[in-house]
Amino acid sequence: MISILTTLLLAPALQGPALLASSALFEHPSEAPLQAPLQATTRKGSQAAKADGDAPKNSWSVFADKVYTSTGSTLENALVVITDGKISAITPGASANDDSLKATTLTAGLIDASAPIHLGFESVEQSSEVTPSISMEYGVDPFDPRWERLVRSGVTTAFVPPLNRNVVGGLGILLKTAGPETLEGRALEGAEILCGAIGGLPSSGNRPASGTPNTFYNRRPTTRMGVEWEWRKALFDAAQAPAEGAGKDVDILQDVLAGKIAAFIQAYPTQDIRTAVFLKEEMQREGFGEIRLVIDGAAEAWREPDLLVRSGAAVVLPPMPGQGRTVDQAFMAANTAKVLQDAGVPFALSANDARTEPLGIQAGFAMRGGLTREQALRAVTITPAQILGVDSRVGTLEVGKDADIVLWNGEPFEVTTRAIGVLVDGVLVVDPR
Image (cartoon, rainbow, N blue to C red):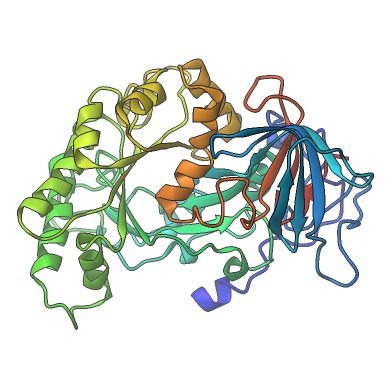
């Protein structure tokens, strides 16, 4: 199945209007024309961005009044030169060329560290609660219009975790949001990440067997305690299994204990965050290994930041909820990102597939909660790149890195600012002209 899926076209070559500069960061997706984000397009809908032959043009110069590099420096009147999909030069105090793309500001392409663009319930194997070897390559929807919505909003890289219906759901996948027309061509090699969940969602739908079981949902866990037990049993069994010959599931769990594969655990309220941290610490005390923990969700991370510092865990924050409550009724304070920043906890922001409040909006919310623009920018560029193990390729504007660049018509993350242009691997997929 995976070989078939990885060769599927990720989007048909649809005919229609191009990705215009009016494709605002805040535009409702239903109002946008359906246009495959895999092809560079122009205002007239032609593929003028392609060079001679079939390969899309991936060499440009881009000029902006201000360039935010995500390295701590901001350049004025800078010209960024792209050659064969890579950044080849960045010159501050320069002038635009006649054929340069132009914008008010530039940033590196945004990275969403938790973008569940999958097949929903069909993306996980629900006949078992612990499925470490199932990869999201089996569950990604290659024709989902959400890919287009992501790239329009400035997101150029996305990590897709499995649905949170399994305790241990499987391996996530990291993809560019535009580019070659196969999953294999768009996949990024980074840190291997095993995903799972703690809390009420993995046990939802399960029920104790009464009489004759008539579905595989007649099973445990049915409580938070049961979910924790599934995690502990899986890790204890893996730790005590032979190093070879125990099966792929055990091999992956052993690599998690050895720190070779990160554990990306969804946990929203304080009690579940504690469970994830205590699980990591228990494995360490038992001498089983040092788990590299990433807590996805962590809406109530603001309550006990010292716990996260102690554990060394990284955090992926969920989108800011309109009423303050997120999954599992966790309360997310407006200054959650600021609290983590002050405590020294590495964190990334995510939109988590929010339709009307994409990643740039989440960065704006974090600024309203106390982050500086540079801190908010790092939380959607270089920090998620580091968490996902791809910071050598993406996350900053530096010579030699992938030319994933967002062109803005104002200061990034302001309410009136839009992403007017996007390049992915040097290919112009949203044209600002």
